Image (cartoon, rainbow, N blue to C red; front, side, top):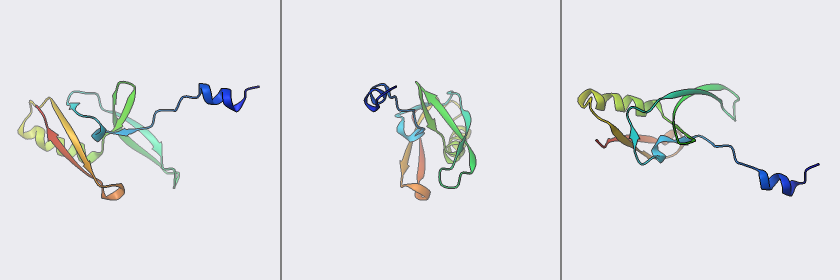
Length: 100
């Protein structure tokens, strides 16, 4: 039998999905992965894209991918960028900033 104290001492928080805007820079050749998730309010299943840096997952919104496409059309040699996020919820906006 385990006490709550023993369980708490060995507890490790499962990593949650972060946002690509939390990274200081992103390499354009990083592998983009896809995963399914469930909306906690509606229990609906959805698919999202993410990159993995270290052992952390960072969600990549479609808006970022679309904006990066436009930048790459003008600068196909772009090797890294960063993402600035403003707002919250449905009002969230993303700006892709080329770095080099």
